[in-house]
Length: 489
Image (cartoon, rainbow, N blue to C red):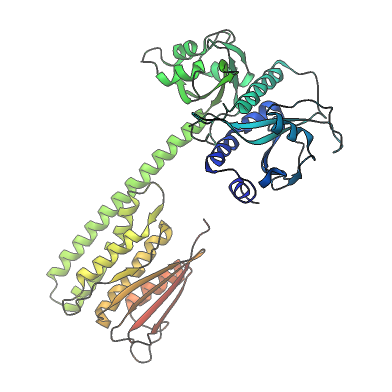
């Protein structure tokens, strides 16, 4: 399905500022749909204004939908939808007309012109919202429904006047409170005129025992949450409905999120809506995850320290050995332990079990170059980037890379040694090549007795479920090709 940006760019004359306004509107119009108990479709004028194209759609979570199929991308000729044409031409909200029965259920259609306020200039009309209400379940409205509908009417008027969405605000996050979480309606003085059952329950959990209706929300909330400490300034702004902001309050172990939507109609503030959500369990889980992440990072840090201690002991033992073969074996073990320690050191600084493997690869390459013999005098280099990899891949890959580099430097004595990376969508392709002496005659990877190559084969094929091949280069030297599957993003 094409995106809003694609449709606007291909089929309309709207500019970037217009598109930003529509993105802000669409990011927050679930609020209008839920308060209206209605579907919303955003229609933009086609190039030349000879018709309309549906560029966005929203279904309500508070009532039945009218449109079970997606409308986005549909085109309507001029004159085909009378209410849209009227709202656009007369720059007003259109509510006239009897219910439409063409779909088999009664549907009330309304249209709202979308206006973008331009500072220091004339306002621009960008599109029209079609609001369609399924009347099949109509009944005598309750106090909650009447409050919702009145609030929806005020918001629709704000859209038509260019006052909603709020200019300069960041798009509303998915975790912000929704209508069904809890709603308070305030008057101009910040007193509660209506409290939904969910909103009242949230304040009961904060410790409120009195009635919320008629109370000044800012004062009540401050008394519940800031009795013995300075009052959060954001709280008073949000709780009074003076600005479109969000804040959180906590009392008695309960955490409640508040979001204020000032209602500004006809140039003056008539009150505000305050959406409320109990986020106690959400914040508790977030804190548990933060504690878990900190614990995991500390474990990686301690593992790294222990591995460095083991490497230091092996290095000390190697210096005391008089047998060259034994000293060389211990030095190889030091390098293997060191490559694992590098991964754990990187993981100790990462917030998740993912690491930037480019940093690890560069350190492994540098370590291989430092320990190469003076006769070789070659500095390995990397071409291409690994990107971010999970730790389950990073650790064995770092060890395999260490073995391949060390093997090339020790036995091939090359003048050039490169690590070429070609990341794909679902596989990581890696080539390590050198221009050294090449492979011995009759070389076979499966029957090779080299401990380093056996380790590489076990890591790549056995642990990473990848493919491994070692072959001579046409230009001379050796080429090792690895292809490792990546987990789905």
